[in-house]
Each structure stands twice: as structure tokens, then as C-alpha cells.
Image (spheres, one colour):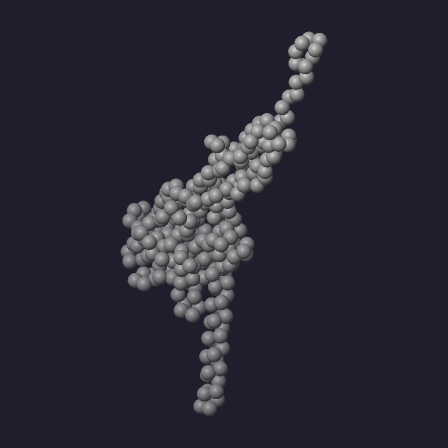
Length: 293
């Protein structure tokens, strides 16, 4: 019997552990499925190409996308509410990545942990060189009473890694992650917001104080030089206009000079100068009326 037990026991143990691992994988898939259902209901909040947003398990629970009692079969404890689910847009395809948690000194899977709701959206865009408006969060305790005291951690994305910074710098194109942290009765909760500083404004082309298309009329045979352009951009980049087209002042006709400029974010500006080269009128002497006709 001892020999049989020695053979069978490891087999049973391994089978149990394999079943736990399978259940664990199923629970992770359930979390990802909840995130995908959230995404289906919040299409306008999904990240654009090359961007990402961060959800928490607590947010999915509050929205009813994941069961509030979802449990880790390996530890027999509930998955923590601050478990991170990152949604990444890779060339138009969304990738769902389960990240780490920071539960040191807390039991934030406890239902008595503070309830946190973002004011505003989970993703916030800021136009470069404008201003960032901090919308904050609404926090309540287990009784529904407001908690005014919470902390904020700002991290900047650099080479796909996050570095802690003191503020959001709107003078450069970048992506930030803000972590809001609230503690009550020794229990901690977190929510996240992605802030993206971007440039969606086209450069401004100025040609002889003209900021849009305009026309010039010149007489055939007169000299003509194509006017130069000055380009400015809200990103403060140093830009130069590309000029195409030519004018032959000795040949009457309609000519177009096209100025284009593009900033590093792909915003393009275009200005067209239309030049009309006109033939001078021909005067013929009328001997009868004794004047030119």
C-alpha cells in the first residue's frame, strides 16, 4: 500500500495543481473578456494607433463587466481591484495585457476598500502648448461618504517605460499615466488616467501677409519673383515651406504657385498663389477719329 500511495499521491497532486492552473487561466481570460466588453461599450475611448490606456479590475467590477467575487484559484483570494489591464493599439489591432498590482500594506480586494470614479474620461487629450486641466476623481468610503483626501502619481512614458515626473509638460508631445490612490481604514484603491499631449493643428503659411489662397495680376513682360513664405506652428517647430510651380512673365496665362508645410505630427498646410499674366492692350490709331482705338 505504501508503494501504491507513493506512486499515486504525486499523480493526484500534479492533477490538482494542473486543474488550479487551468482555472487560473480561465479566470484571466474572464478578466480580458470583461475588458473587451468594456471596450465594445466605450469605442470612443479606445486608444489610437501607438497609444494605450489603463483599466483596473475594480473599474470592470463597478461597471458589471467582471464578477465582483472573481477569485484567484492559486491563492483562493479575490483578485485585487488595482490589477492593471492595459489596452494597446498596435497597428489598428488591440492587445489586452494583464499587468502587475501594488498591494503592499493593503487588502484592496476587500469590498470595504474606497470606491473611486474618474471625473471625466479615462483618456484625456491635450493640445501641445495649451494647458492641462486636472479633473481628479470622486472617492467614497464603504458607507458612501465622500473622501476628499487622495494622492496622485504622474508617470511619463519614455521608450515604453514609465518614469515618475512632477507634472504634465504640455510643451512636448508625450504620453502620461496618472495613478489616483485613496486609502480608508487601511484599505487602498487605485484608478488610472492616460493623458496624451498631441498636435492636431496644421502649420500656418504666411506669404506676403496672406494666410490663405490669393491671386496676383501682372502684365506680360514685367519681371516677377516668387514670394517667399514664413511658416509657424503651434508646436514651435522650425518649419520651411516647400514651393512648387513657376511663372513665365513673358507668356500670358494662368500660373499657380503651391506652398506646403508639414509638422512632425503629420499636420499639413497648403496655400495657393494664382498668378495671372495678362497681355497688355494693343492700341491702333484711328485716322478718322484721330485717336487710338
